[in-house]
Length: 127
Image 1 (tube, one colour):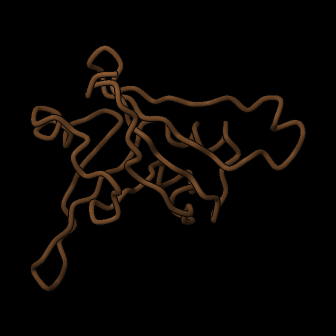
Image 2 (tube, helix red, strand yellow; image 1 turned 90 degrees about the vertical axis):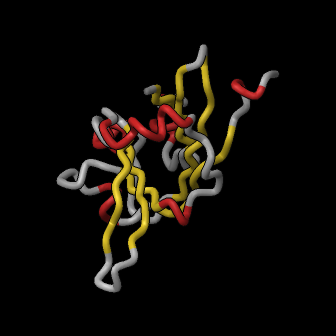
């Protein structure tokens, strides 16, 4: 398997209220909490701030220091609803490349009810 095909764990934590609130419509992934920080190519890194599904921005602080954040947007509410995600659920975000295309996989907690187990399926978000 070539370097381009490797699966990388990039983010993992419990969901916060803002991660599952429809009005926020995003999963925030602070750069300093990323497990793998080099998952983007130089070109993607330059263009991600204008991305459709993955956005990047700097959060300025009163001290003058800032920190970078990534967010999965554009349809995140659908992901939350389809997977029955709730505050405090543990999730993992993995990335991989398929034919050069950057893709993300969401690993969710095991289903809590038999009906969820039958309708649940893996999810891959591709940029």
